[in-house]
Structures are given as structure tokens and as C-alpha cells.
Length: 386
Image (cartoon, rainbow, N blue to C red):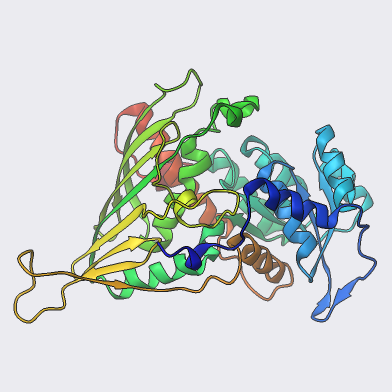
């Protein structure tokens, strides 16, 4: 894979995060209330884990955004907020009592998504909820209904959809592969013991299916269409945790295509979107492809965008040489930054959410179907999970 297609930042993982925080340390809240394009959009971030901090830093750097505060009961969150020069609150209610907010980014543990989002939505405040939208589809449905009643918008943080490489892959699969027959996805890497130091990461709802593979399920829905049936098995053989570490999934799509998905967070491996895309500057780039799409007219490796098809005279087939066409997409910005910019336009009414609450719920249903199938041993129709 050409690193220049996907690498957004350079430098060591530790220095990248430290330098960006250092750039904001000691700054106070901007006194300005508008930018060249209009009034600043006031956003708060709930949760100061790795993703929450990343959201906060992007908010500080976005010219049309004013970061009004950080919400997290952890003591360390106060220090992070002080470094950015913004207020720290232990609850969202406390922040909303003090600040007028246009949007809230929810990057707390998944088990808390429903309750936190409901507070924001009840105030008519639009939310960007990190994936998955909630733990249970029924909770997601509650948020969708509540948002309709208050006018708040829900954007679900399936940030990969904002990546131009993903959008280009969707175009190729839709228009250049002929009829889609099958797709194969590998997601495997080794999470170190330190990753599991927070207790919630060892509990039901925090395993790789809901934490990681929900991204892949969402991309498959986005690129290949709706999933009509899921059959899966899971294992928890690598660690003594409540959650799975390995999963194998057979997917059937409404289009008639079939798919396989292997997930494992306990094996050294270069095959995962996280390591293949260069999307996260804190992760090393493996330069491998973890997706393969197969159609009647060609096949596509992704995220490298290698398109394979026959360019021969006469009858095409396995006795003929096959050609590889390399497609290049210029990625000018981090997908999280593009997602934030989209969230701003959703708040201002310029755009509808690329991943709405309903859409996020369908990705959650398909992901929950993996867990349901593994538990029951039966194939599951995701649309029936409520």
C-alpha cells in the first residue's frame, strides 16, 4: 500500500499526542464568537479516553468550533481540560446548567451512551455518538424516537464512512465489479494487557464485536447493502475475560452476495483496517489489505484499491492473465476531522447526518446478530432484533 495515500501525520505515536496537547496547554477559551463563515458552533466532549481526547483536540483546532467543556468524572479529565483551557464538569447536567451548547460528542463507554445521549437530546442538543450507538438496539430505538420529538439530530460516529478511500471503494464496488458475489474481511491484531486495565473493557458489551467489528459491519452495509442473515461462532479462549476474543461470521446480503468476517484481538497480525488504512496516526501502518470484494466483472482489494480484472482478447477466464489497476485517492484530512466538520454542518442544518440514528441502529442490529447467533447457534435476521 502506498503510505502517502493514507498517512496523515508523521512522527512517533507518543510525540504526536504530546505535541498536539502541548500546543493547546494553557490556552484559554477563545473569546471570539464567530468565524469567517458565521457564529462558532459550541461543542462539548463527554469522555476523555483515547477517542474522546482526539475529538477534543480536533474541536480545538477547527476554526468553526468552540470547545466549551469536557465532561468526565475521572480526576485525570480535569488535568486534560486545564491543558486545553476549557471547563471540566463531572456530569453532563452540570455542564448544561452553565453553558449553552449546540452539539455534544459522546465518547464515553458504550454502556453509558443511551443515558448520556438522552440527557442531551432532552435539551434539544444534537449529538455525535461514538460507535456503536448503544449496547442494545432497543436503546438505540429510544434515542431515535426521543430525537424526533425534540428536533435534536443524531450522528453516529462510524467515522470511516467519511474517508474518501471508503467512498471510492463504494463507487468501484457499485459500478465496476459487475454483480457482487462475495466479500471477505479480516480483522486481527493483538491488544496488549494494558488495554484491558479498565475493568469495563473486560465485561460484556466491550468485546471486539461491539467495539471493533461494528465498524467493519457498518462498512459492509455501506458498501455492499443491507445484511439479511448472520451466522456466527465466538470463542474466549485466549484470555479469562467475560468477552469474546475470536469470532467467525457468515453474512448474507439482500443483494444475494455472501460474506465472511474473521475477528480476533488476541493474535499478532497485520490484517485489520486499523493497521492497514493509516487512518490513526498513533498506529503503525502494516501496508496490507484486509478486505476483498468479488464481482462478476472484477475483484477489489481494499483499502489499497487494487482492482483486478481481465483485459484480454477472447474469452476471459482463469487460463488468461489478469491485470491489476491501482486506483489512487488523495486523502487530505483525517476522517475524524471530516466527521467533525460534517457534524458542524448537521448542527447548522446544512446537511443531514451521513450516519443517522436509524442507520447506526441498523449497523448495531447486524452486529448484535453476530452475538445472538453465536449464543443460539442459529442464523439471525438482524432486522428482527429490537
